[in-house]
Image (cartoon, rainbow, N blue to C red):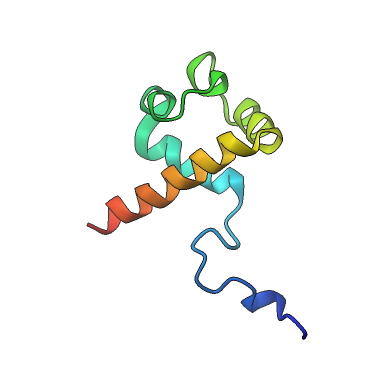
Length: 80
């Protein structure tokens, strides 16, 4: 069974979206303060930056899952 790399996850809205893009869009939509309330992690609440947040999220699967879910929720909200 061969897999076509362009078609591995056609129904996954996160497929092909980089964590940097997710984070930048969330910050633009919510701002750091609200983002920190929605996902309570230090890199969102204390001296927030894209760089520190990316580093933390890449090492912390549970936090990345929460951020990805929030991104999906944001996309859904934008559609309404």
